[in-house]
Image 1 (tube, one colour):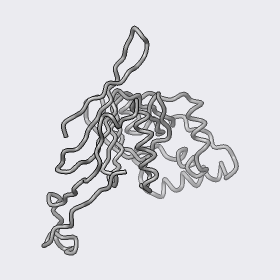
Image 2 (cartoon, rainbow, N blue to C red; image 1 turned 180 degrees about the vertical axis):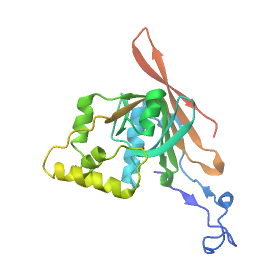
Image 3 (tube, rainbow, N blue to C red; image 1 turned 45 degrees about the vertical axis):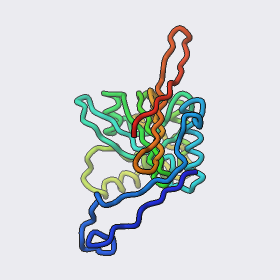
Length: 240
């Protein structure tokens, strides 16, 4: 497993020891001394390679290794990003859950192409997925929803995610009303506009930090073979 060796902080007024001076982000550097990532070391496909790295990220003690940045764009091409949690993955794609009426839900409805980024900085690794999002089946949504903690279920029902609200008190009041209606031990109904999205990847890039910024970037690209009705993956190396 790779190690990350940051350089010591710069001395002087921009040092963290001087809280009254602004920090200079241009002076912040880390040297990545890792074993790298070679083509011969890859799993047969992107999902096998992701499973390998995901297991290593989890074993490293990294907090919430399933956290990923989801980037979407609206119909006019204006992007937005946020962090969500990966809840499932297999050969079909990567799944997360959200309110379909949220900003990301509405943007995906208008433009289903999204990017996922897993920022595993302590391991000097990133995984970048580019693909098309599609809704999961209602029964898959219901199964996951009812596996969540009771409070999270009530919270999803209480919040019209991404809409403007007048105050925190309004959110708390909505939650309190629904918590009284659906106390612990009762079944909370799945919100109408809440459900899963599966990102079907067109490419998956595995980024491994290396010394002197000569990082390893290996990308699986989906290649469809219509005559065989099968999907294959081509591996490309990208310049760092």
